[in-house]
View (cartoon, rainbow, N blue to C red):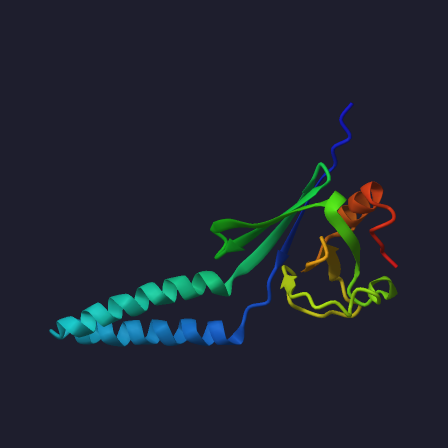
Length: 166
């Protein structure tokens, strides 16, 4: 008998102002240098092409989404750049999770003192109420993410003493 639950959730990351500025700057530089290149300056043409390629890669970093996939007691997180390139960033087993609760939950009070570097796979926006969850994993990782209601229920079903909704 298979008791596999499948839940998928997509969250768009808030775009950085610096990345937007850098993208616009590189596009303007590419246009200017390519124009100079058309006037006969070969070095300017090469610099223009390099700026154009740089603008492409920066634009991929401007639009980032995270896809959470819950299947068979495992959470997989993929990073989608520029709505076209996908990269697996992490896989977490629910059995190895210590606790999962909303960011401002009192359940996390004993864990906040730990010296762990957070891994943020959320939208980066602190809404009211905050939809982000913190998950402490194997004592050395804190994962911040924004699961939907179905994913929280699925995790609570397999780990009722470790997952909280408050």
